[in-house]
Length: 412
Ligand SMILES: [Zn+2]
Ligand SMILES: [Zn+2]
Image (cartoon, rainbow, N blue to C red):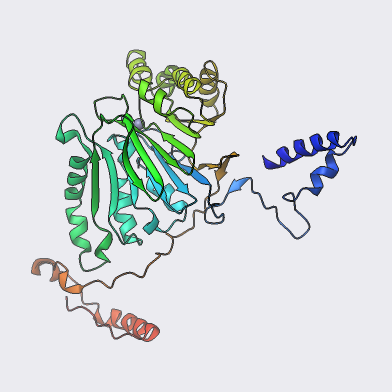
């Protein structure tokens, strides 16, 4: 992208200087076009996680889930990561399948402790348990902080959902007592009023996050804006087009809004009846034509459409329908799409992920677990253990020697 800008700049400069055919010379003399026999280009056409520092004034947004409730290999359900040049990182929605994509970004889990949920459909928070437990296991040595809306009854609110998720994990968490660093196994529920209109729900370190109501399925869903350093990111979660998005997403640098599968594709590929597809795709959700109209009203620097299966055969129809109502900058999101945003420029690329990576190293040393708080097996179960002491003792000897320890096998 920058190359072509420079090329254009070079041509323009050339004409201004009264030089005729200069484009090739201008092209090769630009600083950032620096490929030689031994030197690689500074600017990359793809994003390789954990290889690019963020500039102090830069925001990077990564799509970690752009699909539907039924996660598929190509698209997890809703999740977007926002990284800021001040070091802060925020996760918006945590849909099913997105925890795996998050790991591909190679970010230490201690930096991933803030999640904002737009609503409580599983395609927007179905991987919260994986991020909660997996993150703690891999070095988030502090509670996971979660923000989400209230509901029209307490049972439909975020706090209820998190309290009960925590209870559902009783066996998991009890089974880790005394075995792993305990500090990450806490959920901090920050429930806010879903009726708040552009209310601040988070303000730390120069970052302001506001919520405003969304219209989707039941009372409760919200959309978010994040403002930092003169940049504005907006995330709709799920919603029918609404007046609050029109007002509070205006002039966003990056505006993400759902854009649902067109009705014919719902009928042909999902085998919905037309009678069922119409209300789901146009009333509970936002049809592509309606997405386009919303973006024409708010005029973001970049509009991002998500929440449809984005394939070679479905994309053209989605695109044409959006273009019937919107002609501005547009990304049809797919998992691992990346936007780098500064005041001057928005770059859209794809991340190239490494399937072989391990979770990144923790930023702090783990606490040594206290074996005294382990919950023991019953005699019935421990009596079922085969005697492996002579097989396992050499492993203890090996590790004790390797690390200068004096660890002893457990009795049962
Ligand atoms: Zn939903
Ligand atoms: Zn959804």
